[in-house]
Length: 305
Image 1 (cartoon, rainbow, N blue to C red):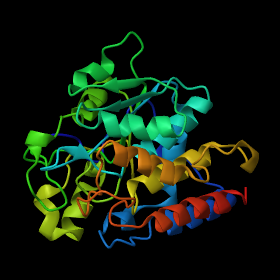
Image 2: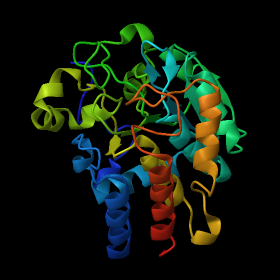
Image 3: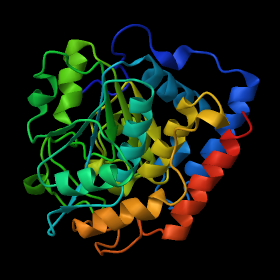
């Protein structure tokens, strides 16, 4: 077995045991109705819960040196898809604005798209471009939290599969191996995904195999301390970034006009929609208007705080 699917606590007690106030519960439920309604019919978002959302926020708050790993190569094009980099960029910026020592990580193939998205919204933090998971921990101050955002995770057979159940290991740098290294070091992992084949989805390995029998052999076996399944991985990150702020006046989430700016920047670097394999301003087959609508819903919900 490649990873302990449900038993991946990291340092200290699991945040899954923390209580949620009634007001927090109401906010989380509304957020999940917006970002995890299973609008794409892929199944995994049905496993989202207010407790998971709360625990994800708490892991981010507790970290000092988070490393955010993203980028999903679309074969045979060899370029990154549009889901993942925008969410990672917005979350990295939010964490940096809170004074955290953030590292935004991707592989060689995805770097132009990831860096393009991040720079288009003013992220000024460091990047790490690597195809080797060990390099995540090579510095003098290694990360104290790994955050996987729409990053492919290997199946139980050690191979990598896309949403079409095609084996794409030849296109995929094994950065999901960072989760295995983190587990050995007692470092927690947070994951955001939407399909079942992403790093961290091993958290729901048994449930997903039962829920998606036709996709069972392609489900990721790489677990996490906390995994947040959503309709589109970007949306999960937008929600987390917004929740990190203390009030509407200290908004840390995605801002007006930034969705289009990131999509344009990624398109200039060759990015494609992972569902359609085409360029344009769509993410997982969903229109720009839908992306903007969800981003606005998140901000409106969090204004209630």
